[in-house]
Length: 386
Image (cartoon, rainbow, N blue to C red; front, side):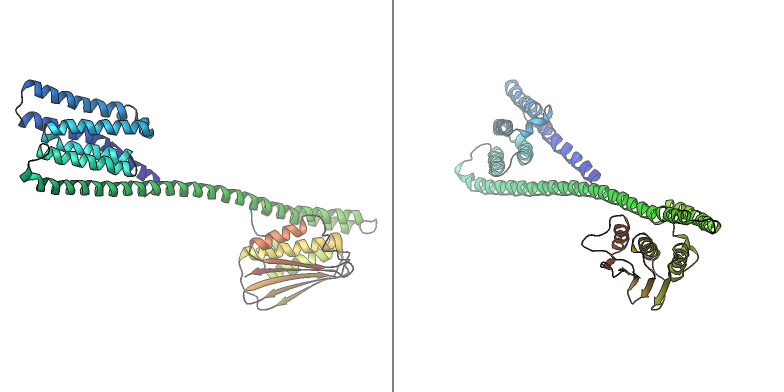
C-alpha cells in the first residue's frame, strides 16, 4: 500500500472514530426516549446531561483538534467524559453503550497506564450501569464475573487497538522515510548522471578536438617551403576527421573508427594515422581469440589508445611505440609502451589525459596501471572486464 492509499484509509478511520461517539449517544438517547416512561423533570435532566456530553466532545476536540496534543487538556477532557458517563450510565442502563465513546477517546488520546486506567474505570461503570448500581448480595457473584469480563475484554481490545495504531504509525513513518530516501537517491542518481555526462563530454572533447587541434598546429608549425602542401593536406584531413568526431561525441555515438571495423582494426587504424601525423613508428600486436565485447568496452579501450598516443606525442619524445591488445577469458587488456623520456610517478604530469583514461576504465569496473621512470619510457595498461 502506497502513501496516498494509506493516508486515505487513515482519514476514513479517523472520520469514523470521530463520528461513533456522537452516533452512539444519539441512538441511546432515542432508545431511552422511546422505551422508558419518566416524568418531565427526569427526562429533561437526562436530556440536559446528554446535551452536556455533546457540548463537551464538540468543544474539546471537534472544534479544536489541536487540543489533543496537549497532555493536560486531554486529561481534563477524558476525566470530564468519564464523569459524564458515570452520571448518565447510573441513571439509565440504556446509556451503557456510551462507554464505547470513552474507550475510543481513551485509546486514541492516552498512553501507557493512564490509557488502561481510564478504560478499566469505564468498564467498571458499564458493569454498574448494567446492574443499575452496586447489586444486592445474591447478584454480586454475577456482577463480579461480568466486571472481570468487561474489564479484561475492554483492556485487551484497547491494547490490540493501540498496537495496531502504533504499527500503522510506524509503517507510515517507514513509507515516508523510504519515499524520502527514494527521492534522495533519484537526486543523487541525477547528479551522478550529470557528473558522468560532464566527464564523458570532457573526455570526448579532449580526445577529439584537443588532440585534433594539437595535430593541426603541429603540422602547420612544421610546414616548410618544400613540404607545405603535404602538411596542409594532413592538417585539413585532421580537421575533417575531428569535426566528425565532435558531431558524434555530441550525439554520444561510437567513434567513427568503430563504425565499420572491429576493435583490433580500429586500434590499428588509429595507430597508423597517428604514426603518419607524428612520424613515429607504431607496432600493433594482437593476442588471444577476438570476440564480440560490449560497445562501451570497445569505446573505452579505443579512447585509451588515442589518449596514450596523444600523451606520447606531447611528452615522450619517443622513437617507437608498441600497442598490444589481448583477449583473455574474462578480460581484455590494452598495453601501450614507448621508449621515450618517461617521468617520475611521484610527480605525475599535469593535465587531463591520465585522469580521463582512469575515469573511463574505472567506470567499467576496470583498472589502469601506469609504469614509468625518467629515461626508461612509459607503459600504460588498461584492463577491463569483457
